Image (cartoon, rainbow, N blue to C red; front, side, top):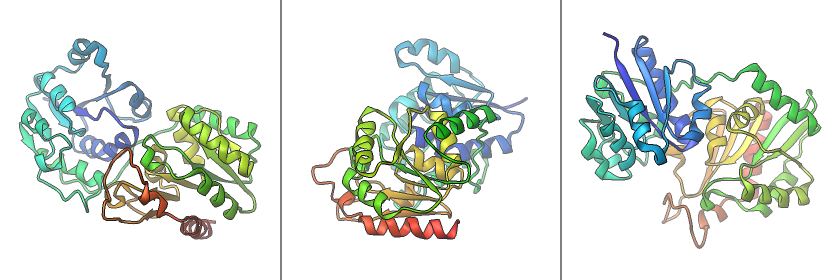
Length: 333
């Protein structure tokens, strides 16, 4: 009998990227298994690019009964990569015969462990990358996974659409694409506009097309303020998939700890990451070509979304970011 699995990683976009290697290892170990991934609507854009998934179950919390019915299977094994009460509860409501979750010490909401039938061994959150932590969740299934594989396939039509949008901004095919991703969902992950502007002024390269990338209206306002000081091209609004295509086309990306950064790492695009409240050992680059800029303070990493001082971001200087950019630029010319 073929096995069935339910992956639960509802959000956020960067964390969905981080869960892809676990899916890849699960699919490799059980090539004939039926694998369903439960995700919130925005994350579906990523999963639509993942071959090997049998089904994507979109979870709508306003229509929870229908959502639960779509993932209910008495014979399946549920793997909760989210580690919250809501995701563990979803695993329980799915009636999965086995429900595997992280050890209580590794849960943001320890009460979630009450819903699991099996738990992974604990890991040190300070030194273990989140991808390795996710792979650990496969060990109760007898899978000792080490590879960081990201099964993402971007359609040619998607790449062509983004290429056309770049051309409309003045991008020439003989230019190298340099992306400054200035936004982030958390205030504590957003470096300061004045420092971005100064950085742009100190990282001008020949035959290069520098581009300011933003995601929401607040980020667009920040990008516009930087554009006024630098006259850089400003990206149009892009869908999640279009952002992924843009990142894949890039020669170098500079970003905070965001979806754009995680995508660049997944595609092995040279990237410089700016880390404030989060730990680069856990959330940062896992192999070259990448650099993480981080200054550990007494209060960091705190993983707080708001802060009165933002000292961890203020500790990141324009000079050190510029030097990291120049080093990667030279080594990947």
